[in-house]
Image (cartoon, rainbow, N blue to C red; front, side):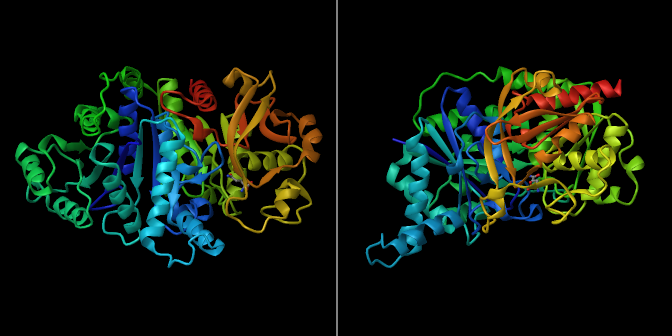
Length: 533
Ligand code: GLN
């Protein structure tokens, strides 16, 4: 029968439940267990695809084309867990299904209610993932904080599931906060007691507490938490702040989390080996070289908006034993003519994906700066689109080059919609999404990075490079080094007379892991190091 670990969070949000879930997954994998990880998001949106980055942060994309919560990115970076479109459940998805069934008459005249119909649908989806795949343990992270009205049906569903499956088949992990009060010189356990109290009111008793804290907790505090929260001493785990998120699995290992989980779920496995992960961390911590990479975007004030890109840059650093100093540049600021000052000293420039015309001209200026000053450049999705617009305007002399996303009737639509996208009415889930194949030209920087001709990468965009302009671009020195032959679409462009200029229509950042660094990020950082020296 399926085994589950339910991860909930208390006291405040942003305690790192996603990283905690991913780290538990990593530890279980090290013990030879196959895992799946699911994120439950209590909001009513069907998926985050239609949300503004200011609301949600990055939209993560899976191979099978789901637009999903960014926690799935943590899961994939830390583990080889099974992740697909079923790995992110939202209230929107659940209600959509329940209402569709009601309209079809599936409920045979019954009154449709949150309990049992909504909770049954949640349980069905959780069990479906666990049953359809060959996994030993399914980790389920419940978004939000205990006490939120929105998350109640999810909590009720996991309560029922544990009751139905039995104790050795499901366990509850609660991530909580122990605030340190400076004036009192001690940690406060009361918020944790309250949070666990609320959980117990709804019938959920935590088996393991992961206590986020700034400073080490004392034996007395551990005893107190244990006694008042009904959790045995050894299951009160100190999760102290660490410098790098990739240290968390090792921290949990030290706290004995994998042993606790295995014991409580009655699973017997040899001790695990985290040697490679440890080596990766050492490379990260001990890197002596440093490069400066400017990321030019319009959501730079938000740490989560380009989450996977920032992580992939760190990974690029790990692969080159270098620390990547990420400088975030607001693209609109470049429009005020400050390129030289804002991009000064950059060893590499990266332009991430995006939507809408705000800041576009600033991004085009950043491309021009990188191209003319021969600074390594990586353009991603919108970053590729602006790279071609810049090239059209300033090299091919097509002055009014633009994307029809920004100027509908532009005279030179370098980037435009495919016919199938023109007819679309619903914005949700209707972009070119997920993994598509791409063929690489042998004599290219991309081939040099990937070391193979056929690759597969994830997409999330509506607009495409307009093939009508291919010839004039080639004549002027642009190389179309990656194409999707089935759909005749441009996937990667490069520049003949530039040390490292690669721009891709797909999102390589979604497939980079700290211990399996994406080839483009590895070679981008290598080029930046070269630029520096
Ligand atoms: N807005 C562009 C498009 O829809 C780019 C999308 C992106 O960068 N993810 O094609």
